[in-house]
Image (tube, rainbow, N blue to C red; front, side):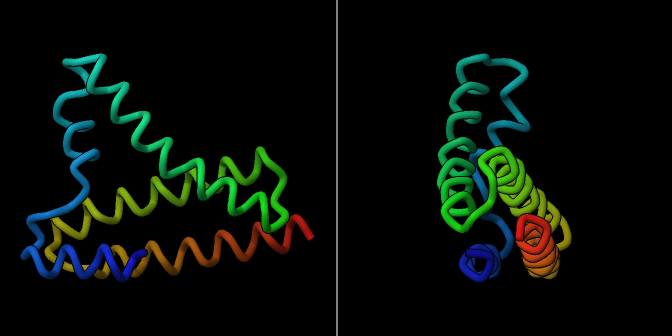
Length: 109
């Protein structure tokens, strides 16, 4: 997924990113309807990651927290990548996510 996002950023000259993030940052304080739509969009990404982590043995609350952290890290990395015109933040996020998931796997074993 990170490589796909990095490719999109590179191919667009760092103009494209996550439209949900943009709407959240720009409009959510002005429109409850848009804020709610953004929250639902993020949830549609968090839920399947949480389900996958649960299927791999993480307790439900831990899986949910990890999934939220993963999506948040990726979203933040996209924003920083656009600002820096570099995919390095995305690749750093991927490394950090791998460590996070590995450590959580060891902790739940």
